[in-house]
Length: 316
Image (tube, rainbow, N blue to C red):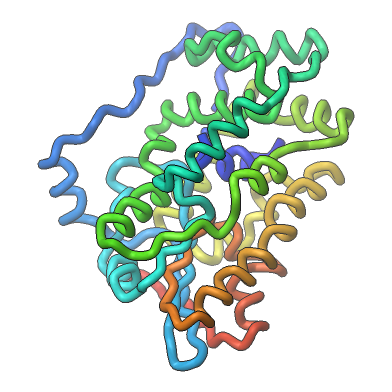
């Protein structure tokens, strides 16, 4: 399973230690003090990727986010903040502050059947990775393999100070609701669960083996640090070359899954953003950054729908 999938699914709930290493227990994030929040907001700089899209005399915005972040990355810089303030509608992949979305997420997790029996060798490797983060394997064993891997990824991200609790999407949702803007979800919990699910048992086993090998050799953690830094420095050129260095497109199985994860979702996201804009709104649409790059990238799809698309560069 690719690094991209685990980063993507982190917003719904990065990396590796040798099996014989002593367990390291990254502490959970602490509640920042009001003074720490105020200082971080005062010194916030623009990060990520921003486009202005214009049609019918109105401007909307596309913003590429990251689903795990460091504390001082959470808060929008001046240009992103201005775009949010100028928008009447804040559109996210999922608005996790919406009680209905939370209830449907919880129901989806409860409805998940016990994970099919996995080969003993894969269970051993999963257990070792759980032990390395002081996570009792029994806490995740009943879930499908995809979610087990996601949970391990989230736990190990803390070793590098990357937290799902500091996700930019969540901060934007809080800002939108606090400012009494219309906050909408571009997707549904059900569609995101379906995206995560791998139906072919052999394909799932192959992706699990590849993903665990990345964890065991430390490749995953190294690549995740790189992705996070690319986002933090708003390096458009480097992220546009993602397929060259992500090591996530090396097999037909990986390529098919990446197509499902990004290319198959982007047309529906573009259609939903377009519909919101055509209702007379100025929309700030924030989704994972990889949706903004590639042949079926959201800026390209919206340009095909008649939008003038302008990339906004941040001072470094």
